[in-house]
Length: 231
Image (cartoon, helix red, strand yellow):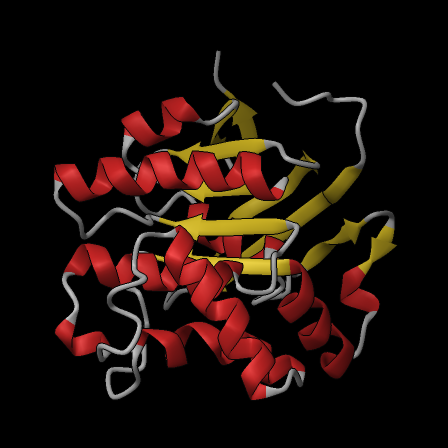
């Protein structure tokens, strides 16, 4: 169980995000607040279209809100310029999506070490770290296989390894088992929880899978643009 007196990692305050339709401007997020602490796990559930993925993209600084702030350890990250924001994202956040977004012509190892190369790490050092992470997710025998030669479950494990290669403080996952069968989904669920404990990272998971959501410490949904925690 997380000690909620521990460090506050991420805090969103008064976040609003809108999209222009052909007829009107639609506010998907409206005056939304969220606090995420070190090692904490949170599931955001609910119907499609309520803003779950939009929220995740803002928390990960992949998108900017129309209003509101996002603080990492009390520093407003949206005041960073684009270069500094990209560096912050690379060093602090790990991302896993429903579609693994692997480069098909590259091996599991090459896909996994990519964030480390982007950070400027030497390739030999990056490869060593990537090998270790791939071993941890159960792919030590598949590191040199191209992404197209891996099963769906294996591809998602590579995507998870890629997200974790720089040991991020925060993992953001959008429907991480949405394309997997029940057996592979359960394996990824268990792996996420094990890695949360081992690496001490916080985790926000957007999911329709209530079994996965139940494994998180807190569950929330979005109602009228605001985050509401479930009992």
